[in-house]
Image 1 (tube, rainbow, N blue to C red):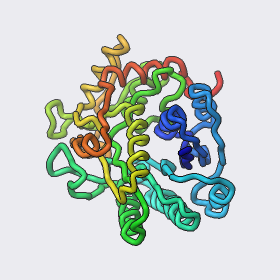
Image 2 (cartoon, rainbow, N blue to C red; image 1 turned 135 degrees about the vertical axis):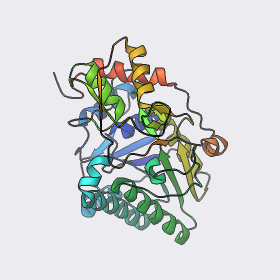
Image 3 (tube, one colour; image 1 turned 180 degrees about the vertical axis):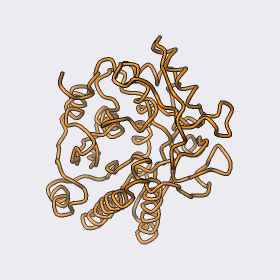
Length: 340
């Protein structure tokens, strides 16, 4: 059977890599993206990598009238929902922006999916829903208590999907809780392109390495960890993309509602990531210690047993490879997707 998937936010960092995975596995895609935090060039490069075409609607998922055009004009059997604001720090400063965008876009997609009977839905959630974990690694059964408005919006959407699933027993919904995606496609053609000062660690490091930023700010060195810096579970974005393909296949077995952590099961501190990048690139990364960043938790890494057992998901890339691929992307694209 030929499958076709609607991918919202498909031009974004995780979305574009997932498109490569889907297209490479003979799954057709339709993309909705308003490019508020992404580039159309990413889609062109996905087409270049896969030698496949992408049907694009440059729409905002919060505009239900426009979004319905996509459902009315096309036939697809699943939705993968990436579109949403994602910066933890910004969400603390402007919480309503995050609640409005992230909740309304998902509500619109669910209402239209219900109307047009698209019964397979994958939601891009986050490990931030766990807040400050009482124990690590965190499993899918761990307590949910997000600290930032960004994480809280993810929790609210998860609750929305759970309630929706209870009312629609014939639907299949996968909630994927990402840990920290880093790296880039091995070709160096697509990668992470933050706007302004990066919110995430590795693109911050690569921009310092390329000379775009003078030094890295490490947010806090007084956490209760071995070297005092935050510990996170870093997963290669290509591994994460593969997780979406496996989750999609799971939905096609009529599995109902499922929740999976997508990570490596290993935690690395900020300083360990800096040193791994220095080893991969041969460069020294200057950094300064700054105050803690509001919304950050001391450590968080995944229990990945459930995804391994039920999806056959195992992350393949190690931290050194993640850093190598991120550096290759940055070197080939010093200005991101912008033309030189």
